[in-house]
Length: 629
Image 1 (spheres, rainbow, N blue to C red):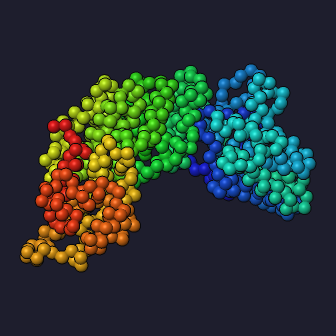
Image 2 (image 1 turned 180 degrees about the vertical axis):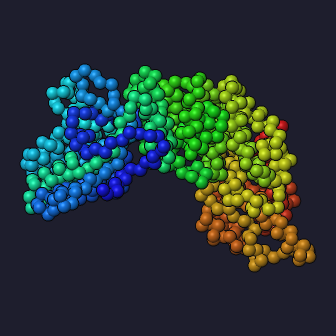
Image 3 (image 1 turned 90 degrees about the vertical axis):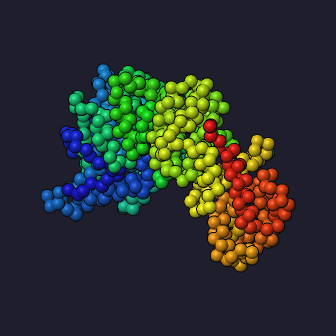
């Protein structure tokens, strides 16, 4: 017996299940419905990974049948092979008088649905070739007996009834003609077109298509095997589903959470279809499935939402890797909200998360999100989501909270302080502000951050921040993203509220950090003659990486002027520099520069210029990232 091919992968747990090996005729050859719960994920199988290996097995089985029929060998010489297609888990639904027997599909919906697509393609091909016997047998595998189907429930004619998002496309599989092919069509229709082409080509490759169709039907009915697992009355369907899918499966953590919630809603007597349509269907839009980078990983937005949401509920960090286990533990509490309440709250937070992502960088929260993106951290995001989901919180309070968080982050990294305790810090703040009135929630957050005294959490005061800003090696101590955040914030502060063009942290990501006095200075920037050479070199080395020697330029401008003499660099900056960080503090003296130095400010660029500009930019930074005293 050949090792069966895995069309989708499951890691089996240790739950003991009673399983039977059955032929496909057992599954689809009797009047029986296989109902996929409305809340299960949509159809996701694809050509290379799933459809092609399935058709390869079916074609091989059909050709073996052909050989046997033609006398190539008999079962007495070589027993027929069974091609195993994997396992399905079914739960018998309570019988209803006059209704077709129904089985709830706990696991295997992708496999069963694909087999129906394949059978529908074979049925269409048999009709084209007037293969009447094959057509009749295939029809029996697709439809239940017409007389058993009540006119008010026409969907009961189908052997498989897929999840809600797939039903419209699934019904089209059984119409006389498929709709014209179009870009982005439903995957079920794409599967049907694939199987149509393969089956038609294979039938025409033989000399007698009708006999080939008969061999194909025999192979489909008798040579394809499945492991059918039917749950007994004492088996917990959700536990089985988790066992099959929680470890190593292709399902996302959000799929497992979703399944748990909707099965719980069923048990609580809720209208599952109505809940799905009201609270979950929008999560099936492609936007929620897109993977976004968070730190070093890529995660689907829906998984991130659930992770943030559960952190808000529990007060603990919930990594996506632990999301399902942590959710199950939280939901099992005796005082847990109902499934309907959870779904409604998730939908509400989902809308809040969409609003967050739509915020421009000119909004304080939008700006903070861009800063977090540059820094590759998400630890404060649950706070921002919570504030956005609270409809009573004003924009001013949200802005106050976002500005305080940004100030803490920037001041700490300028001062060289650790980020290791940020998770616990922001989760602690989150649990405090959850209890705060809407009208003062931003003030509460500010006060709690300012009250931190631990070295891993404190919000540096003005003197500490100033010391970090005027330090001699800022370029080296702040790696690229942090330096861009700092310089972008200075540019935004210089522009102020009156500028018609705002500058956002994301804009800095496209620019290069430029040394005004170049790192390769020897050719065009001689040391002062009135200072001993070693002292001059030491002073220059100390000034080279200071804040006052740094600005932002485009990569092209950086490359063209980087190591050139000052008179050339100044002309090029005059032509192309549009940032006030350069125009208002390099090409012109900032208003804090002493009058004597300002008189001939841009005629050269020396250690004195760097020292004075460092102090000027430090004073701007203190205003850009304030801290309550």
